[in-house]
Length: 325
Image (cartoon, rainbow, N blue to C red):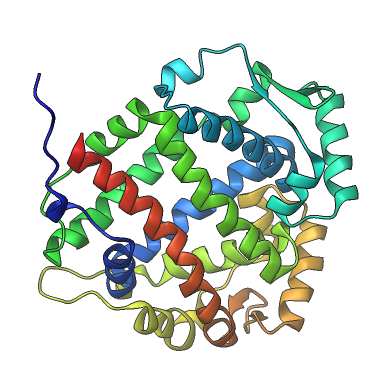
């Protein structure tokens, strides 16, 4: 069998993906926000605690890193056929640094996970029991991610920087076939991206609530954002202008609706929304519903454009994997 020749002219760079995502933002924003909102809902629903989930996937990512370093690859089915996952050289300090959390918080969450039978500690080793797999097994998330990557590939085709024509199922299949590799890439996108929002909003519950307000606004003005073959996509700046300044004030959401959608207690939502109002990130409209403010654009823009580079890197790796496979 001959050695496969790789045509590097057909592969992508992070910059190419990033520029396309930003310039086609009106076409892609609804699906990206839905992608992230559904993931955050799963994060919270697993333990009714965002940080316990982040601890578990940080440990899982460490096993995926080891497999990658040893050039060991597992498919989706092979990976989840295991009865447990073992993490060598477990360190509370390492988790604190990765998740930007106080040592006492991480220690308390780890002890709670032990009491729930999700993990077992043995000196410097930690075992993630099979009972944790349903919480982190990404059946639906792979579909959401594959759909978004497919939409980005279409935009890249349109920009004539990526020639391969794909469909969503092909992307799902390559992620599952190369699961231990591709999902390490996914976690290397999501963990720093989500922890970045944790730093900005002070905690993940506040970010989750703000994201729900944001998603509601996007869905309500999506007809204004959708572009067809005769209308060019709007970039990040123009899209945010429509979302916030032109149409946003009439598309609010109540605390009860946010609670129904996220399962976060209503009292917690009201308390966190007071903080967001104080920070001028949301406001109440005339119907006493929560909407975004124009300050989102000025405060979050520099930050969000930076962390979107994590997204570009993940998408670039998956699309290039399809080129060379």
